Image (cartoon, rainbow, N blue to C red):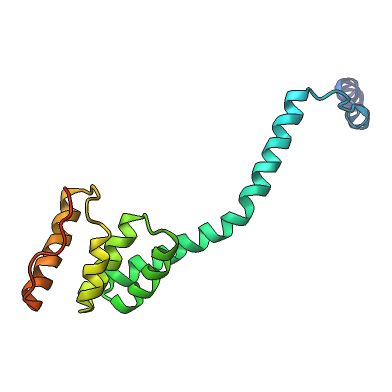
Length: 157
């Protein structure tokens, strides 16, 4: 009796099972034959954009790493190293006021006052947050007092 109960239970399971090979065979034979033109265009545009941006990615990544190293050097009072790193970045990104500001401050903290003044002059008439302007003006005033100079730089607030 127990044997027939097991046998019926096994038959019930067999009846509800779907052969896995049959489903796999159907899925493998289905083929996409019509892809809408807008999908093809979207994929092509994505591939072109990727190909165009790929060469820039490595240089952007390298610049980001260099900027991070410069910020660390500055924060650790390694101003000579910060100058080298910021100078190189400044050559490529001369419009970046943060790089210019930290290059000038690195020169100032290294005692390279003429270079600091020249760098700060590049920020003249550029709008910046008051705290940054105050920091630059304080450095300029300190340089002027050390060198006995009159005001030669004016930044806007």
